[in-house]
Structure formats: structure tokens, C-alpha cells
Length: 156
Ligand code: SF4
Image 1 (cartoon, rainbow, N blue to C red):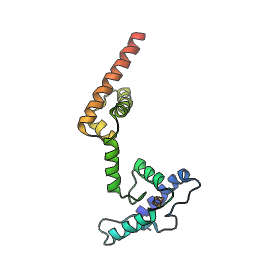
Image 2 (image 1 turned 90 degrees about the vertical axis):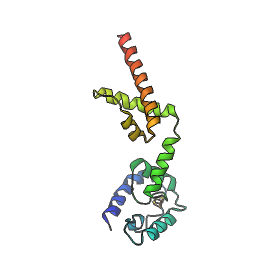
Image 3 (image 1 turned 60 degrees about the vertical axis):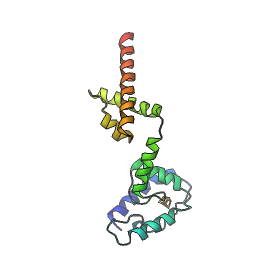
Image 4 (image 1 turned 120 degrees about the vertical axis):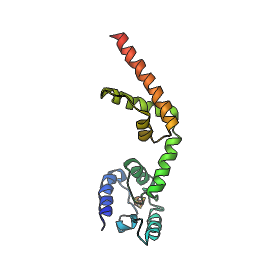
């Protein structure tokens, strides 16, 4: 079993509590099938085999959510790492600005508590959004946190 497969094994233990009562389709499958190294001549074959195992797996959606949330590699929920990166980009791109601003406010508060300020680059990276959307969210967050601070100052 490869080191990557062992890591998958460990990650599955983290996932298992979320799969209570359900049986995952890959439980009896060699974990190496789910990790095709790019230089592996059987990479396509292994990936296709892993996808086939995932098809119809009763916990596929939860497995995919887990992989998206925790940044797993290999095939999870019937998707490859590349496909999950694209899925993340699509999900982030379709998030409403109000949700992005709420996240940016949280980040701005944390940054100010540490004596700094949320940068557009950091917002772009953390929220996985375009530079333009990050800039808009950061500016709105700064205004909101400035207003909070002014209100607190006025109340004191
Ligand atoms: S979706 Fe695929 S990787 Fe996830 S638990 Fe099911 S069979 Fe395993």
C-alpha cells in the first residue's frame, strides 16, 4: 500500500463518523486504485476503476463534500483532484456577494485583532474568488468593520 493510500485510510477514519449507518462502496477495494500517480502507465485505468466504484455509492455526496472541505487528493465521491478544484471554483464564483462580504467581515475582524487588515490577495485566496470580487468584498467588509468600531466608540 502506498503512502498516499495510507493517508486516504487515515482520512477515511475522519470521514467515517459522518457516514454512520451507511456502507461505503470502496470499503473492500484496494485503496491504491484511488491514487493514480501521474506517471503511472495505468493511471487512466485506475481512475476509471475508482470512478466505477464510486458510481452508485450510497455515501457519494457526503464523501465528495468531505473531500471538498478537507482538500483530499485522489478520487473521492467519483471526482479527481482537478475536477474538485474546478467544482470549488464554480461554487465560489456562484456565491452571492452578501455571503462573501459576511466571510470577509469575519476575516477583517480577525486581521484587525492581530493588528493588521485583510488584504485583497488574502481574501481572494481564502474565498477562492476573482480579484474583482475579492476587492469588492474587502472594501465592503472594511466599511462594515469601521462602522462597528465607530458605533462602539460612540457608545463608550
Ligand atoms: S464515493 Fe467513492 S471514495 Fe467515497 S466512500 Fe463512496 S466509493 Fe469510497
